[in-house]
View 1 (tube, helix red, strand yellow):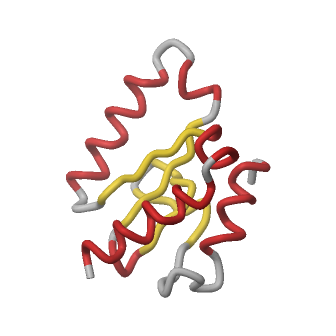
View 2: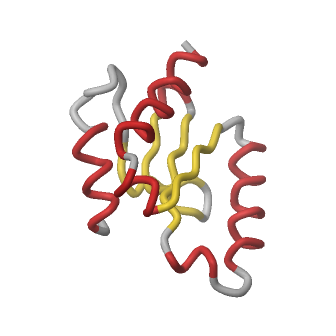
View 3: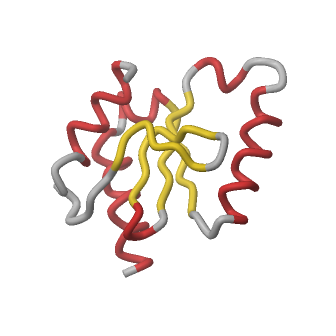
Length: 100
């Protein structure tokens, strides 16, 4: 895991939000950063590589595949996690509550 992934993982592991998350979970041919099977919620953290040529198109195709599987995707930039961790955790919590 990257440093930023570890930061977020420290806030969502061990059912701190009332649900279980898996890290580096495989879905089809893809590996997502975090996945909550109970609420079919994918969390992706976008670092610098997501802004390279072709990366956004790849992310779009990947997101569409996930949506076809009935999954919801939340994307956060690394900067959001580092600078606004509490808001990121609140957004994840709200997504869980919206589906509950």
